[in-house]
Length: 86
Length: 452
Image (cartoon, rainbow over all chains, first blue to last red; front, side, top):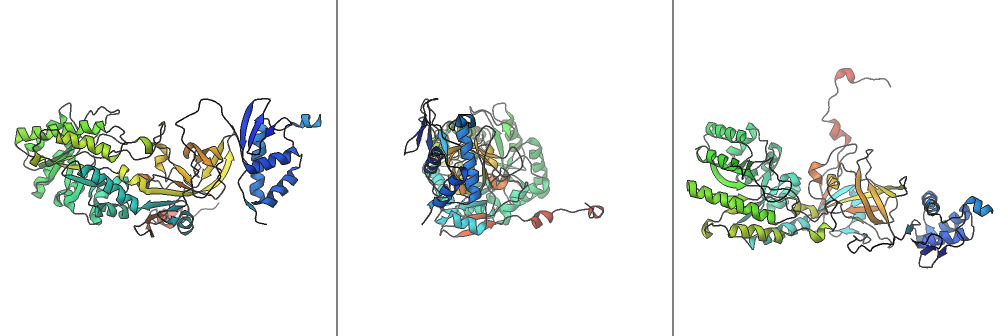
């Protein structure tokens, strides 16, 4: 999974999608995950990076991570599998 | 290395459109303490969910209400509406503050007597009073408010049998300009039923007509309606005086004052828009003072307001069971508080605040209860911080009706704790147990064995 290339994310947590013109607000941990996705980190690497910085347990983060990814997909912010292959 | 406090990742689309200048704000500000006691400690000691009632708030509210009326009208008496919250400790606070008891059933009547309320200071309202109840009320010289003619005739018969002359009032219903008009209780003013009942009482030697009573509605947002009701009852009392040379001793305007809750569908929060005690007191007192009563003959004004006196003193504490998403992607949060103990969530958008600090990020969330029933919805939509499993929340303004209309349904009812004036907690109603429930049931012998 990878964040679409043209998506801009500010340090303050403002995300802009130039294709649709939509804007989003993201919280700090969300920005960290988006940056890790942009770097094409795997799910395992992202889990490990977040778990090492935040006080949470694995099941909680896994559930919240899947939910977050689901919302990114819903809003068409991730590159599809085909796009990634191309 | 100390790890950072975890908050679940969230992304929220920014809606562009007309700004909503009246939009209700997100409840970021946590409510960590109630009357000086940590919410976390209360929940640790007494469980979750948990009702908490503030004695300080009750006393402050009744004193504010009394001041609003007593500064405007010379003779005012409050009567505590038992049905609003009849936990013994709560009734006792109101009685300590000088309120009489206003009851609407034999059960409530017996509760007031068992608490030590003088029978003469019990107002007995309601459409259902058994002969046994009425016999007791007559013996104790309570104020009986007659709802219908069948009751009037029964009281007359019982009075004759007991060789007593009970003090009675009639409940009057009337058009005060509000919709819906409450006309199911008492005798109608406009069509002459009220006069018919008054004539019957005045021509009977068995009863003494001491008062006129009305209760025009519930959660009334228009104080002006009380002005109309007070004028009509004043006119009726003066007409009785003129026709029978008989003095009506009190006018009872019942209850129905709105609390600070927000009704479902309301555009603005109730805390900003609902009338105050001063608003109600001003119209009621003006209507009575501007009527033709002579100064020394002004009737006593009785008020049976319940909701507005207790709602703000009650809190319901609970915990997050889970967060999930609906098929449409909407955030759903499940609490351990169901509609079985928060009946008023059918009427109000209760204010919900977190009990611990959060960042300023929020989500629009549908709040569900824990019951396996589709109707178990506490708030259809609330903007809340990012709650996690086991986080605590505080639901506000739950003091009225929830501890009387609650149901033992699916789950057992929780502890109720009162925080006293010295900020000490007391359990005033114990959490129910399976034994409590089973003790009321009997299983016939042939059903005691089964093989599954």
